[in-house]
Length: 404
Image 1 (cartoon, rainbow, N blue to C red):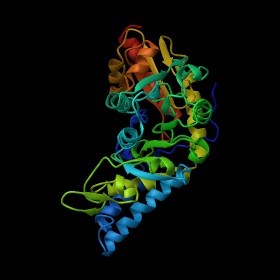
Image 2: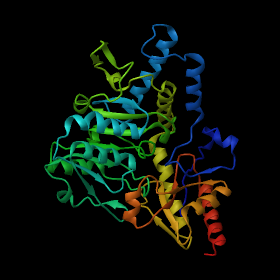
Image 3: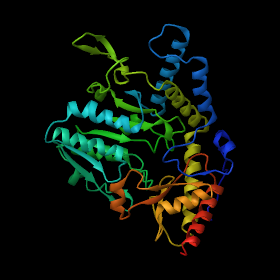
Image 4: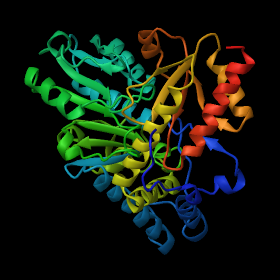
């Protein structure tokens, strides 16, 4: 039996549970719930200093600018990104597209190669597919074995022509935690000039991230997957790579001087943040960092490790369920033979249990796993042992309905 040591219930931080006391939310891989502290901070912006940033010389505009830039610095420290720049984006997808367009179009040349993995979320695959078409490059893949990357055959995938490696830190389907530091070190033994882009969307809320130690060139993540707002994310760019980038969004706020026929751009990070940004969301994302740090990443990681172990223990007792998981984080995909994942999710939803069904924006990985779609459980800080018990009760109900 899995025991839960000093296990805490963090639901009281999240007002959604006051309005939905019977809610069992097991879909944090899609988006996390928002603590009251984040919501309060965003409302503070709208009610106390709701002005545009960087442009006004009056008090509330200066206050908004200060809070916005304060969040940028919080996020830089949170990920150990002191030797690079934090660019606010609309989320992980926009951040990776910014790398593909703003760095890739300028720096990659015909005949070079990009390597990605079979386990990537579509937002860390499709931008590279499109870049390959634009620049006449070659796309190669690191494959998956037993829910984890094959990291022993680097020499067969990465070579002197490989200019860019794009890789997720944590799989949003199997929960596999890739040894990013080791992968980067091995890749650079083969090609010291390789540029590495890491999708950290499923990592930053669940485990410590130190980009000084990791050694990547770009790191992308979203606010809404770390207890912050939707519509905001970060692209961190190593200083050297940052200087090689070009903006892809043009207009107000990102310029130095504009003429009728030609314009010059700001030399600062705002060059990549054209237009009015999601100010309240950026400020809220900074407070999400405060929330995570208040609890402590060590406690968060231990909490989720214990829950994941309990989830595995309980699921292994349910006959007829096949799991697709490395059991390295709180993300588990599963199937019940003969039952479509959407039916599983619907029956669970009728019992107040929220899970995700489908291919989870990872079609190539599902094909590699030999399954069309799965039902996915993904844990957050607010989950409890009782949530998992209710999930298992729901899965038994699915089996009963389908006579399994």
